[in-house]
Image (cartoon, rainbow over all chains, first blue to last red):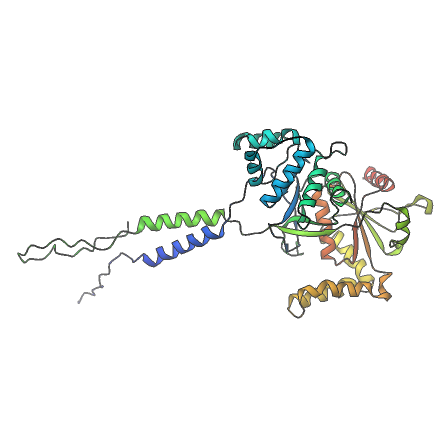
Length: 205
Length: 221
């Protein structure tokens, strides 16, 4: 019987196109991804059917975590420095250039003014520790630091959108208080908020 | 790994000529591929595509001057549902206004969040008044099918709700979270407003009478 001879193919494959593709994708993802600065607060946001997307720029954000601590965030480095300087004037604290730079690169923060300098000087691990133990920005009407943050931020950047990011188990009165300050004609003077939520799929759940 | 030597340059020649050994021009690319895919995986996993989603909430303007209250819109008892949000993700609702001076307090009805609870009631009540839910749903469908530009949706909605023959009897929903409500409850309730196409709704605070009503209702259970 004649043997059927299978053509001996080389088992090696030309991998060049695959490599090309892989590196193309790597380049794509490298360029598209942006690393965000670490948030001081861990917040598990509720989900909603709303599909409105908000830009990550030009945003004034108030965060309330599950322990009802209030954090503050403002995008834009120049704006941040300006607000910090005004807050320093108000509370009689002078921030040095390094602290200002650190502040402008930070994400959200939630420490009282008294601790802010220490917080800015701290290294990342100390800061993380501090963010865990902090009491948040005071929202008492007697010592309303968040009011001042809102006041100066709204005046420095009046066009910024206002967003509230709350945890699922944040208690409502705290959020309400923050909203009241935001709405107050002498503080925030804004009646339109964006509540940051997760995507939920349709009303069928 | 997968690469076998396909080197056939010079080795098997039986001529006596000495030749410089031709080395293969092929390079083993496996490690490079490995590295490429490793990086690829890393970047895929670390990339966050999703921008934050948000829900827009417009709050009523604060009224300081009592005389302004005269001009503000009055809430019609017959077309108003009050939704009380309280602890343990509980929802109560009642019609009209709870005012002890106007006779007996309305009874609280307990419902759950979700399709069979709050949503069913709201859609039913909304449809009882000019079939508001169905009409707005139609508009939404037209947008989804591309028959209508998205930005004209809110204009059409307002035109429908502001029609003089409907305006006085459109369903109004008042959301009243008490001090034990969680932020998630508010978002869920606001979500229901959007799903049920409620024309007019507002986020308020529960008053002492309603707190008492909730306390009574909870003590029965």
